[in-house]
Image (cartoon, rainbow, N blue to C red):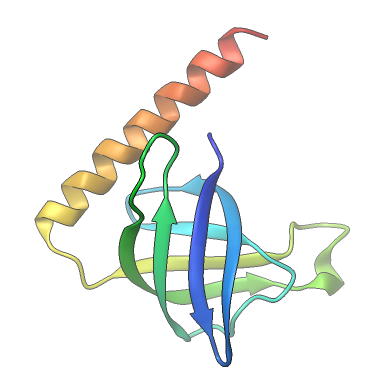
Length: 109
């Protein structure tokens, strides 16, 4: 899947990270400083080919730390929360576009 830019606010700072793992229900954000499980987070996701970020709210459901680096990529899994059907439909469309782009890229190898 194509890499997407993810901006989010933590206590005292604003962070930009990247992800290749997004679905209708959530996103895995690669980061060496994951938030704590249960933390609420506001995300701005910038998708390839889109100028404006897509704003979502979520909650951290799991994380991996640097101690797990030999087994897992450090980061956090965020479940999207509190969005209506229109946002759900838009997410489905965007995820489908990203998956289509990925399949085109992998077929060219």
